[in-house]
Length: 280
Image (cartoon, rainbow, N blue to C red; front, side, top):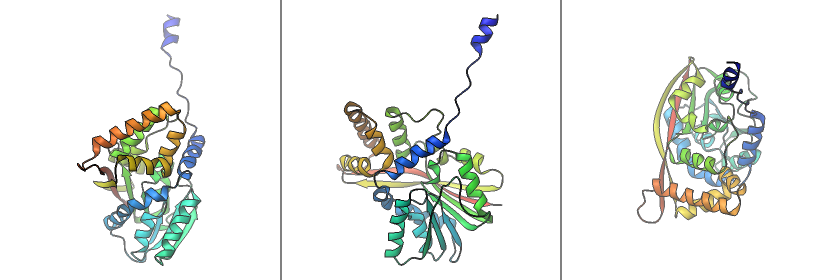
């Protein structure tokens, strides 16, 4: 019957407003001071540069560089490094760090989905816990491939869905739901998603690694992330006091699930995918 046929027709899904999502994310990463957290992750940039086997004199682009962990690691290996991010204040922190170590680097404020560089401009393109947070996964991946020369490499470090940070974002999403249609950044931490994004021109080698968050206590971690880590800061700011208390309780339970210290401090490993892509 007509009525049953009409009832079976589902309304089309509303398209995701990627511009609004990007503005929201940029606002989150511009709040707090990610550099306070970011500097603790330095070892990841060093490990990624070693996995890429980069060579002195190569041209290197760090996309969504934050306060410059991977950029600094590449510069320490005598590469010609350009660091980019869409949050200028974070690049300022990277610039200060480079100056303190007398490392020659270039800095440019830029959107990972619209990089202001010519095709095939770089020997190596890096991103540690950066490009994975772009709203338009396909466009960001296309830009990584575009600016990397044929025969060059792309290196990524991306949190996995089941990791501590992957579960952190899932926990936040239960209290402050993301916009309808928004995809999890942790998808970048799966080989299947990366293969779909990067396409047949890419040969992908990926290994699961672990970064360990070491803090004085769960309360100390919460204080630091609530103050300086934009997504957590914004989540608490969006909630009424009761909601804040519930989010805090859930985050402490999450830490307890992953914590292996056994002594009251926080020692929490978080899995990430270390990815080396060779562009044909």
